[in-house]
Length: 326
Image (cartoon, rainbow, N blue to C red):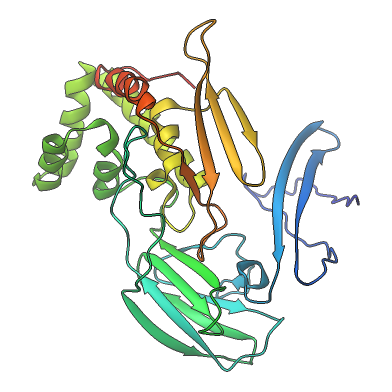
């Protein structure tokens, strides 16, 4: 273990200022390990613990790549605004060119938790493929022209590589009409959803839907705020190679809210909701799935037993009530 002290002063900078730096931690090549990192405000007595998986099994994996903006600022995320140009570096390998597979935005939603149909966890056939030449045998520049997955491989034979997800500039927020309509599908029937898609005035159609289930303008505004805040949280915490609200975890979080208890292992995450006093908790188990694009991919263990809890939770929203207040 080790401790690093970072001294910071309030210099009048706006709220949200980021402190950045690095600490070199030797990890043997070919190893997979985990780090427990605790960040503590010495004077404010606030503390936060975070867990990071270190994957150094080969030199091709995502963690061997560094993503920087056009002004050389390190990007602590691989969610990049469309229209941006980033520099991607792998100092562990020398290469002449990079193969890029592009996968367009996936608009499908996960099946409900009681469905017997398994979701397609990640795409297998690229919509297009192109090559980028190296700038110095360790780096290349990528223009993120569209939303979707950009998967870069330095060796076409090896499945490991670097994934960049092109997102809208407002990400993880939900701002556009298209985003709002798509993310509302969990509590809409097919006809209602299609009506909003076809509407000439989508803003008016969205407001009319929420007003119809809430009964008055003030309640509608509150429901919209609470629902889309959950969508934003889902994007923040559960995004993998797709936006977080489209994942199994995102779906459960949006409808049921923050779990009362969570348990996490290297291959499983379990959420518990205590719906009724004295009754067993409603339990959702998410299995971690390894895929070429993301280390944050989880699949819900579906069961027909979830049909009644899901129907009840959706009915709350459709009656103008927030299910399980956060």
